[in-house]
Amino acid sequence: MKRAPLKTSLNTLLLFTGLLWLSLPGCQCKKEQLLQTVNASLKKAFFYKPGTYWVYRDSISGRVDSFYVNYNLDTMQQLSGNNVEVCSVFFLEDSVGTSQMVQTWSIVLQQNAADLSCPFSNYSLYWQGWFSMPEQLGWNQTPGGEGLGFVSNIYPTYTLNTLSFNNVEEIFYNTQNGYASGNDDWFYVDTAVGIIKMRLNYPNDTPLVGNKVWELQRWHVVK
Image (tube, rainbow, N blue to C red; front, side):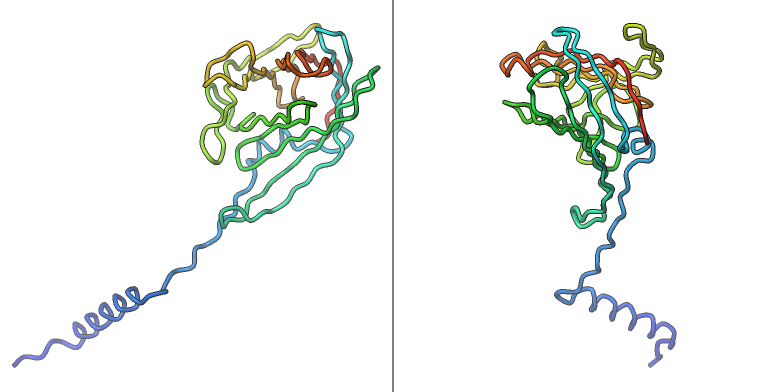
């Protein structure tokens, strides 16, 4: 009887050993952790530093509101088994000539998306998927899929009163199943400056919130 060549026997033995090892209970390869950083363009646009401020005028009431960055954080967090960079910017709203308390707003950056939030009196507003990179028409994209912010226009130039801005995104944040309505919030964003205009529609809230059309008057941005 002919014997199998030694090389063939060794290959068969190695294959059998490998299959046996994979079949053993509890034998699992350790999942490699991914490092997920914030999109560089998104971070450059919105990771503001203290010293940044914006002054707006409400074109409905005439009231002036100032916003200024209090502090920011750049942290690494364990999310879904991965190392994820999360950048947060906290800025304060101070209404001139009113008794309104100072309120803290925030922008949170993760991967390619930015979320915006603010604590209005009867509402804690949270605009998930408020902005995303790359800039494009349609639904903003988030790490988990589509956000609720919809880019309806990108203006190469945009004039606001006597001011001129470049590459301005017009974003509506829908509350009516994807269709723009009178109750939606609208944002106009120049990534070199920030939010240049925002229209908030909350008529059932207190007069200090209600309907607002904030228009940027002056600003100083530190990044």
